[in-house]
Image (tube, rainbow, N blue to C red; front, top):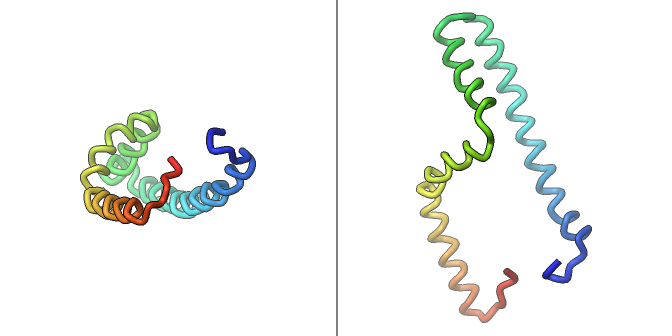
Length: 102
């Protein structure tokens, strides 16, 4: 790597965050899917079923990269406040003379 760090060390440091996110995504997604599926079955062929099944079908038939591309403008608008916070933090980082690792 260009930073001179061992690859296994870099992966080990990030593996916990990946597993943490995957765990909480499953904790939220599985019960939500079961509940919405049961509601859709209860009101089969009704407007509630179509309201639940439509977005579910659309989200599985559209590739993930396209969903990210479509949602990125909304994320960038919502992130204006966090961008300002990051910029202020970066300027403070530069003032103390710290070197960037990027």
